[in-house]
Image (tube, rainbow, N blue to C red; front, top):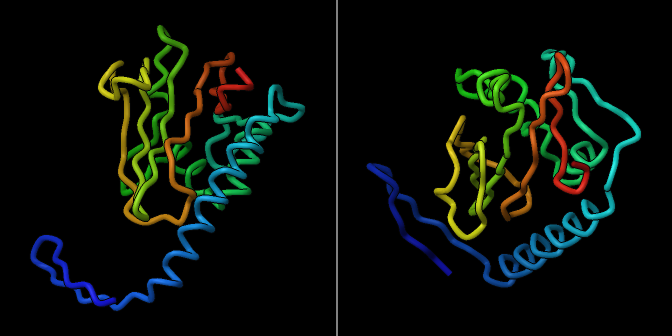
Length: 165
């Protein structure tokens, strides 16, 4: 199948093998389901993992599992350091008075957005105060909205899955 489309001032012509596309889509769906099932097993952590460049960020075994299985170490780095010249959300998104932030990694169509909010309602994605956000222009992370928490723990900020909270 041939597709012609444009984004802004750039025009694209793409030839796509529908059978290969359907197989890739099925693989992505399976990977998303496997990742969700695997993350559900993490209810606590045995090890705190520390970011090598931002020593203030710690993460749990569940967040480690996500980064490993989704091949999304860039997500941990984005939370710790920021992207595209924009500083990361630590300490901006977890101010001392709140001690808590909800991290949403929204992945779709090979792109993603990372948001840190003070509150979140699955039925109203505008709910809660947006503390920090950044787009990710290209990713092969499994599609979906992946939810994490950032919680202040003394002088550190911990990235963890909702089941580990």
